[in-house]
Image (cartoon, rainbow, N blue to C red):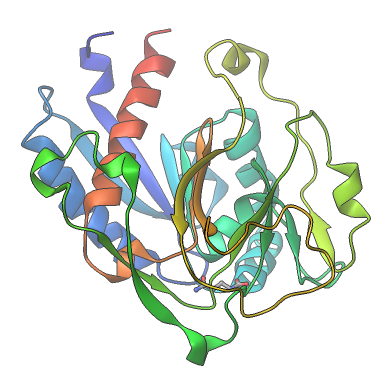
Length: 282
Ligand code: GLN
């Protein structure tokens, strides 16, 4: 489908309740300049910090930054943003990317969390293990091979993506894609789940929810923490899952906004362009 005038204005928000939101806004601006050199349509991008429902409703896509997922969820709850966020991600199904704490919030299930300790937005049929690699001082950097970056960026495809992991979660289990709350998950100890939402019918026609795709792994790293529940855990050689996508929702365990490498932001903005085009020209 070709671009039309109606695809020109695109607004992307960064949830600015807590965490590294400013860094994302800067990198989005940088990414849009790169995209402008290869996009045949000249676009008018707006990047904005999002704190209110009204600001969220003006967005075509949203980034939920890293920070502290319990703090973000608490502020979201107090500022009446939880339900609008769930609608944005799960009902209207607009492109949403969560980094680190953002990935935790976008999971349907998160463990190592006290019941009632935090609310999830959901959208990704996965269980995340919060703070999988341990505490702040156990933060690390790693070179990642991210196959999805290779499709478009021939000139840079050789260089690995340097990723920063800070009290990072991993996806420890892909959940079966069934509608409604993952009831089995609710019975797992120290695990919270996101409430289910029916997808908007008009949106359902244009989007295929499908299964969760693994977009990146971190090989050769043993989990810092193990518990009795080993079901669904990857073996060390296969690696820990650190990037996933399902329909409109994308999540990464690490912080691309802290390294200044714009490649994932460029790629994600391309996904936003596609989604906007589908939505506006059904
Ligand atoms: N593990 C943290 C949490 O639970 C996230 C850390 C981060 O975003 N850097 O929210």
